[in-house]
Amino acid sequence: MKKKINRQLLFTSSMTVFITFVIVVSVFYQIFQGQVIEDLRTYAHVLADFENIQNSEQIEYDFSVDNVRITIITSEGVVVYDSNADIGKMDNHSERPEVKEALAHGEGQSIRQSSTMNMSTYYYTVLLKDGNVLRVARESHSIWSIIYRALPVIVLTLVALGVVCVVLSHFITKSLVAPIEKMAADMDHITDVNVYEELVPFAETIQQQHDAILKNTNMRQEFTANVSHELKTPLAAISGYSELIENGMASGDDVVRFAAGIHQSANRLLVLINDIIRLSELDVMEQEIPFETISLYDIVRDSVDMLQVRAENRNVILTMEGSPCNILGDRQMIEELIYNLCDNAICYNNVGGSVHVMVETRNGHPILEVKDTGIGIPKKHQERIFERFYRVDKSRSKSTGGTGLGLAIVKHIVAVHEAEMKLESEVGKGTDILITFQRNVETLV
Image 1: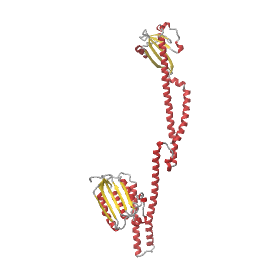
Image 2: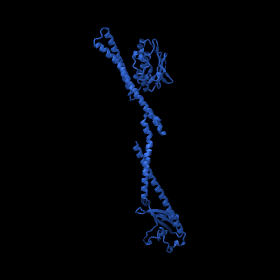
Image 3: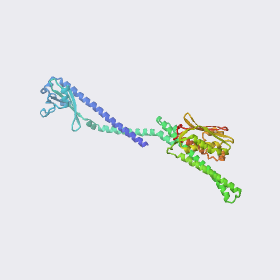
Image 4: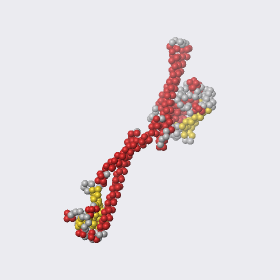
């Protein structure tokens, strides 16, 4: 990263120096050209005021002293006087741009480059009173010649600027990268690093992602430990019972009792493994689930009917009321959701208690409410009740056969359906879980 920033800074500074050099040379050369033309204009106007300038034979001044060339041209383009050349060998000048401009407007000017590109000739023309054109010319170095003559100074300047750019880019790169390196060195306190204002949102995002990763890692480690522990208990029971039977230490009624224990532990293992597999499926689910229009009321009614026997066995009254309403969702998931909520309400209820399920539409949103008169959940546990393997009363969970994964599955399904879940509970009075879906679907297809 440092090398890349350093290279970009060097490239930017080099381009800046080069462009600045080109602009400065161009500007100064334009100023230089303007000064030369202005000098020639002054010469032309001064000479035009002399009366003897009209008579070329009376001109005795050596204009080469001032590096100035004087030419007098008739309106037909014939050269009648030239201070530097034999007029007999000179061609017609009527097509020269500066001459045409003077004949048309009274004054004219032009610049022509020599074939060697080392010199430029500047021309300024004035229309005299007798109709002839006075042209004043002067040779001067071209821009390339000026650059060539100044090349040693330019090279030294560029080298000095290059050294300065290298040093500055090194320090700038170091200062730019320093906060990022500090953040990378201490990811746990990334927001405590003094960074630029523009990096604050980035640092906060990184901190949140880092915290989320740590939390997820801790949850996975805890999940792995919990799975191992949960699997160990029924497996130990199965191993113990089977070993007693294998060693002939059980006979008669004991064999039946041990076999029942093995069967019960095996069933617990199956339920636990099925819940773990289901959670894993929900975790890795990447494809968009094809939702369909389903009747929430009908699914709740069927689930309540199915759970009536379980409720009766635990001496709990299970009831339902509401009105038909439809949602967009996955039928199997919604069935799991309702089953887990109702089963949980039955298992953690009191003898003679009740579970009431409500289905209706409120403010255009289908709602599912499961309310029980069970043992309730203490305030300190309510935020964690939907975590995997989290149990408020572990001894009661084991006796009811709960895996501690039912509400975790509920949380996943609610999230998949983009619904909202609200929990209210009071110890000794019961629990109320309210799920609000996105919107009501009016008709079934």
